Image 1 (cartoon, rainbow, N blue to C red):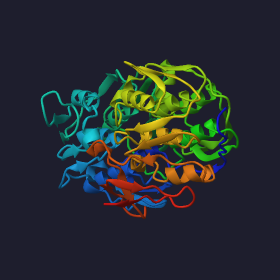
Image 2: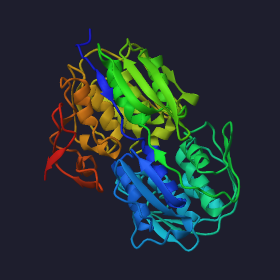
Image 3: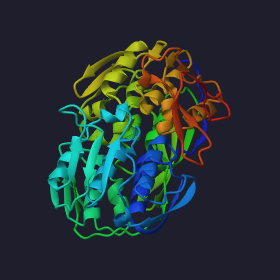
Image 4: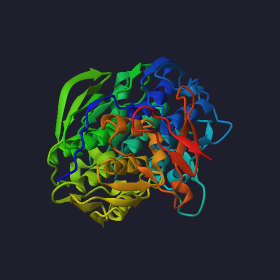
Length: 479
């Protein structure tokens, strides 16, 4: 029998990270003012904002309500310094598409150690087919950052992508819009479609036919206001906590319910949780609504094929849920997890084993056998925000004793996560404890210095004092 845990309350998740990136980029490329509300002021989105400022775009400090005065793609200029993409793959890949289509503009994209290991060739190969000029730096065969680009006139492209990747698709569509050429992208499975929806809302004629997206030549972007909805990937962590509880119900307000993003909630329902949509509305072409999550007896599932692209960011959390479900869960066709902020297949399996879960690594996924025994041990988050939150949920369950060297990495997507976790459990849950000796420099916690009205300052510290489980969302550190 599980120890009692009540999860209850109402939460508005932080703004959607994918939409926040795109709102900034599209506002910069349009000619005129675009108002952005409820943007996610996280480290990843700050990287996009900082890169656009370096390119000459007047992006004010990120706040709940601000205006970007776009002057069109032709106004972007060669930056004085390399563009720091930090830990953000979306920043690097989408900017590569924009920069490749700007004749006369030269730039160097760089990032942290984690981002520099992530593959960029899946973006640069089709951009090179269009006529882009790109060079990787580093050892022979290295296909990550740093990456140098020199903008050039681009040719039309018809690309059959081997990966279901919204970042690759978006980079090519943005290159087509900026260059004014036709682009067609076909994917093995349909990936998230925020770029298509947001382009259409700005007057661009985008046609979607099954797994194929077609952008005609000569399209122009109009300025457009954006209300950024709550991020379903962030909401998933608190939804999972509610599903693991023994009583209560959690209300998640203002969540993006784009069908290409709700696969995690669908899999949560299949596991036995009570997940109900209480209301839905349209906001700028994106469906947005309120979710109610209640606990239920969780059971194992088999997730593969079309399940995966719609839930790719939620899979680490679902694997942790499987550790508390009845039976053996199998996740397949998820090799994309190996090229995220970490090798999430290997890292999740290793961490589950470290805390006492029966887990097996597969080439394209993993197998997890659930149980009810207490979990204890130290996990390594590899600088990956989704691993920190997923194992933070397991750590919050009564009877478990899980520690990590990197709880501060949640700042990449959900700076207030630990405070919300404490609030919805009434202060009874213990956040992810800090391991006393990080195993490597990459595991040093990221410390976020507030207030959030201005740019976020990121630094590393050997120790982090987590907030109490009641009020503040602020993380403090000692050097």
